[in-house]
Image (cartoon, rainbow, N blue to C red; front, side):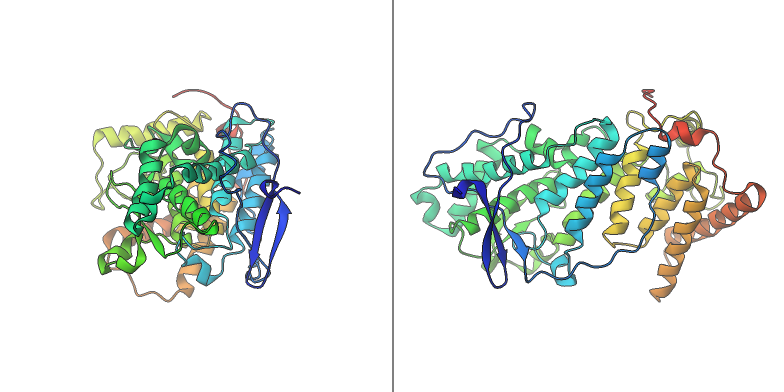
Length: 431
């Protein structure tokens, strides 16, 4: 077996080889041309043997895939992508979650990000062919290999020159840029396969690509010192690598860990595709609750006429069975992001946000179930009562929503309204 067709698999005690997937036959996603024979072969690092035992995930019985299939939509590719996503995050130990993305080993972040994209692609396109994850992994690996032709004596002269040469290769030679548009205007900046294709992405996607190049260069022996990725919190900055020995105290908030990266990817998707984009409150939950008339108008969040009209329009689209619209979110992708954030075991509020979306879908029994799970987790955390007015309003709204759901159960049972089928069905109305 040739070395180029194998993958290096590393554990705490041994190395072994497994075959690398064959090149993709998908002509619509061409790979980067092969490098010169002198370039080092491409290997991906996978943790084995010494990795933590997978955590047991409770059966949360998420609603999205079942609801889609109940409308006649095939969700098999979406289910498979979700299963693969879970197989990756189950490897996360508490230590690995807090590990820098530049040195993590047990979770393949590139592959995990592509599984996220693969599920969303299936939800949106209903294609009979799944997203070619392995083909895009090869493209990501080829991007690392391409740097080798730029590695010269100037790069070796100092650590700073070496890191700057990587930045020049990524942002100048290859033309990767940070998307300056908001998420709704340029949603392809949020999916790794689209970023690799269009070379325009969010800060978190560029951080991921940059870190994957660094890990490959370390594997090949070209990088022999500790580095970190500086993650920018401003709207225009680019992720950059720096020598960890020269780090400052002010750099600490800009270090991206594995958990932070996965959360950022999924929260970007959730924010971008939240079906209720307009509202006076920054809270996504309160925007959706306001559209459901779960918030009193005297609470200090008086809406302008424009915002009220937007909320009513969103509810009207729901009632008519329109699940997606230009600049007004997409219920399927918002639900999918919420479900994966819950699986990632982030903030319990993700269950609350998921519940309000289920309520809007008419899935009242599931909505109540996850609201109760949220309350149980919140009460078990033994947090001090919040003094934040927004948090207090959110909790009051949760209680009102629970009362409403209990009344629905008593009055008419859990029968779904007529529009649920249309709402998650294959309706392509554009507005």
